Length: 326
Image (cartoon, rainbow, N blue to C red; front, side, top):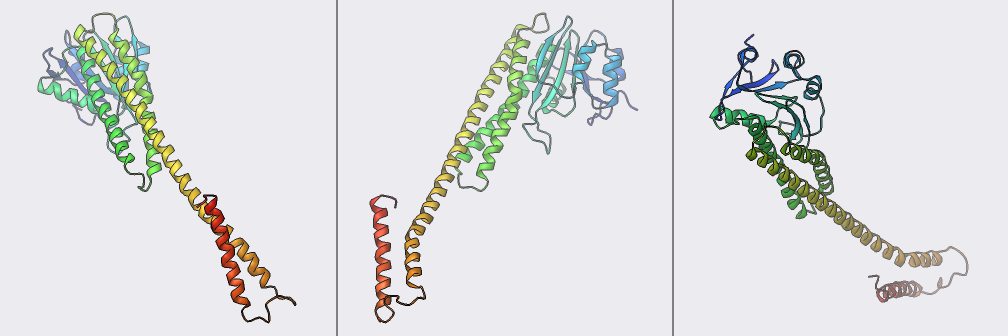
């Protein structure tokens, strides 16, 4: 077992760990290294779906039991809690994992205290990879506040892209009423916007509370960045509300068009039935096989009957025209 190596597949429960140098860079750490870190800001990202990650959190992290429970929670809504020695926050980002739905948002749980950042996950989040790449290139976070501001900004960028994709798809749907599956597509849009919005409203509140956090974890510029992310979440919520309303209007228009088409077809069928009903009665009456039927001995009787039938049809059509039913 190589404790001092970080594996990308997080088979040992440690997705990554860095000792931040305060200048944008960081030194990678392993499980064994965590026991010997002193007077350095450390970021530890744990996959709690692995036993070793859960064991480290519960036995070696020295965190409050309530914080540990929150970090290990399977399902959690975005929120922020202040403790005497730190801040716990839960955020969500859109799901960009292969084969997954974008609206099935992925959560990340973060504990911040002076000198240490602990984050946990169950599913992969690309925004975390972005921060790792930034640390490797020397342009990463330098403090707990900048870490959270950077993470929330990257989460917001991907959420914004997902919202923009929904709006573009709706624009295309508005020009494609005749496409097969159009109404199903609109239902999918409504479900997608509802599922994303479900988490954005509490995420906005969580970021707002972070920007009002007491203590010295956040500098003034970092608080300003968190306030900006709060405003972005509010904007995304408004855009999703608008997208949902647009999808509803399109669905209503589609249903109205469908009803109009059905009514038009029913009108044609009703007119045809109204024309042929008296004609069918007339032919049935004249076709009775009984004695005394008029015209049996008259050679021109057939044409008289046909003329009367066409006259009856013409009278019915004229009546419909006069009533403006045609």
